[in-house]
Structure formats: C-alpha cells, structure tokens
Amino acid sequence: MKILSWPIVALAALVVTAGAAAQSSDDDTVVPPAPKPRFTVVDGDTVRFGPQTVRLFGIDAPERSQTCDDGQWRAGALARKALEEFIAGRPVNCRLVDTDRKTNPPVAQCFAGDDDLQEKMVSAGWAWALPAASKDRYVPDEREAMERKLGVHAHKCVSPAEWRAMLRREALRREQGG
Image (cartoon, rainbow, N blue to C red; front, side):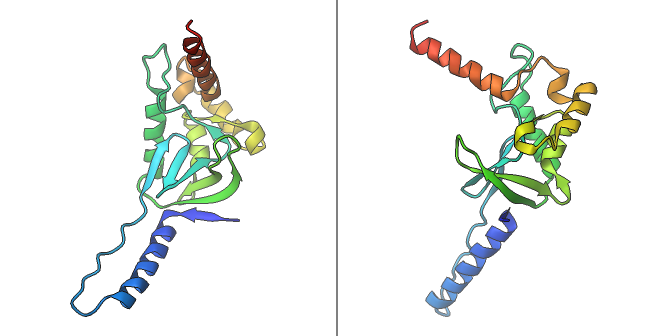
C-alpha cells in the first residue's frame, strides 16, 4: 500500500540535494537548500503534495465555486477552509486506495495525525459520503450531520455531482445559443 506524505517527500528531496551538493561543491561554494515540496489544500476533498494532486477517498465536498442558498452561501470556500482547519498545520499522510477514473489523480484515505480527514469532513457536514466508493464507510457520519443540520445540511445545497451536472447543462445551453 503506497503512503504519500509531504514530510517524506521533502526528506527525499533533501537527501538527493545533499548528495549532489557534496559531489559538486568545493569549500567556498554555498549550495542553497532545496525547497520543500509545498503541501496545499485545493478544495474540500482535494490536496496537493508538491505537484501531485490527491483526491480524498469516499467523499465529495462542494466544488470551489459552489454556492448554496441561491448563491448567498459560499459552500466551496467554506469546505476548503474546514479541511485546512482540520489539518491544523499537522503532517498529512495518505494511503493510496484507487485512481480517479475521470480525472486520473490518486484517490487516497488521508490522515492528519490520527484524524481521518474524510470522516472529519463528512461528520462536520462539509462533504457528502460516496457510499459506493467507500463501501458505506462514511454514511453514518453523513446521516448524523444531516440530523444535526451541520455544514451543507443546514443550507439549501445540492450535491457536488448535481452542481457539476447543472454547470454542464448551462454550458451546453450557452453553446447552443439558448
């Protein structure tokens, strides 16, 4: 099982750079340290380790531009912020589960410390469970978030899949001149 972790990638880059520096520098040459691969939260269900994009396993969070309540509530931006807050600057480790069939990035179950980030997002109402993908792993968490009206469940929101379908229909309608 493949584990993705930005601290490990950074360590590997540092070791490679240190080896190259030892071979190519003389006493008066200063070799700058290699930049660490940058970890970023892309949206509520996607992270990036340097250039590698990773989708979180078994969940679907609002798209970056997705709004709810007739455009009055910015669900996508708030879901991204929630994931950043759950990570809280801790190292993130991900276990490869699959590859996204549509966009091809790895799909992985990711953790910040011992916290299952997928479970955190669904439990807080910032993502929907994908039962078929996760074998119902996050469905009870989603049910509880719905009952408690947390996050997206407290607003008039459609699922990200419905949102994407709506955007495709609108684009097609514009393309056809309607």
